[in-house]
Figure (tube, rainbow, N blue to C red):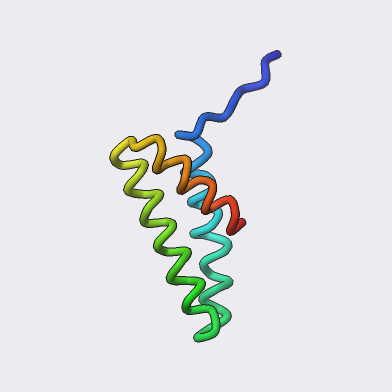
Length: 71
């Protein structure tokens, strides 16, 4: 029972980093064909950043789910 439960405050920055560091570069490599997807991903990352900065829990949940869907 010493298993640590990950909070949303811990999980959201992790998924943001994964999307930013792993997924975004792949879309950039695709070139013009990936531009629309890249714009959508960046919008999701921006929303996640705003949600974290303001502590808006419902927005954090939405952002987390959106970014997990990209993973």
